[in-house]
Length: 137
Image 1 (cartoon, one colour):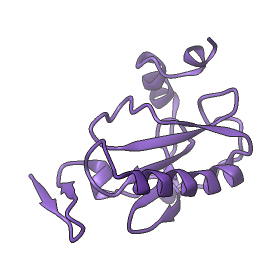
Image 2: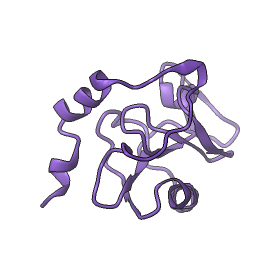
Image 3: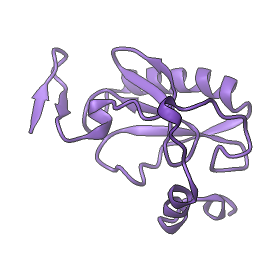
Image 4: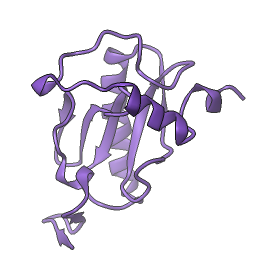
């Protein structure tokens, strides 16, 4: 099911985040984390390289700092959304545009293989309770 890395943390074979599948543009990677565009939200998302929801504090600080660096360039004003909606068993966080939720409206980089997100992905986010309506309170 899972395998222990040289750091003592676990990676799970069936977890897409552990496998770090490159479906969208990547902005950063190192031994602690990777940052790519979220396939559903079109915003930078930082992912812990190990499976679980409680990385050590120093890993969280490192990941937030890397996310801030990428988000400042990609989004300008932003906030960090640490709510793990769709994948609750693997630590990750999104940088969202200030006053918004999705990354729509900003210039997009071409995706490998010409893959595009369509209305179905956005509808999935909205059906799941994601989206700007949750931010307006």
